[in-house]
Image 1 (cartoon, helix red, strand yellow):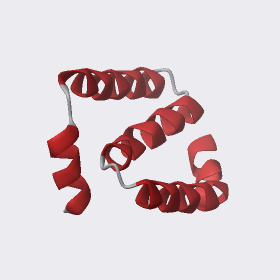
Image 2 (cartoon, rainbow, N blue to C red; image 1 turned 180 degrees about the horizontal axis):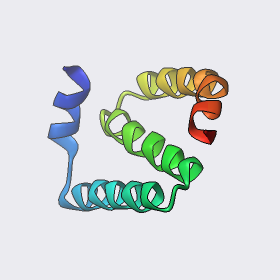
Image 3 (cartoon, rainbow, N blue to C red; image 1 turned 90 degrees about the horizontal axis):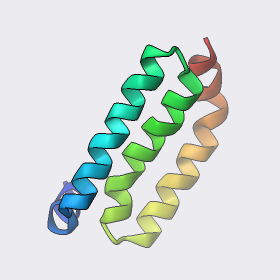
Image 4 (cartoon, one colour; image 1 turned 60 degrees about the horizontal axis):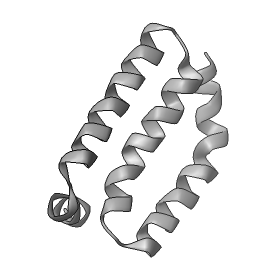
Length: 79
């Protein structure tokens, strides 16, 4: 979709390395059963494409929706 198209246009080799490191951090957090850290890395990873889109209003809207849903997700990751 739109976000993927904008991301593909703006993604640099450094961005790719950062995304790969984020995935590695998530894997380490999962292996350590640190679900709070996993959740934080996961959220950061999934916000990156939106941020790369250059659409500030889109990023703000998604960030607000994620934060509103946080209270429902926290018990899941705490289990």
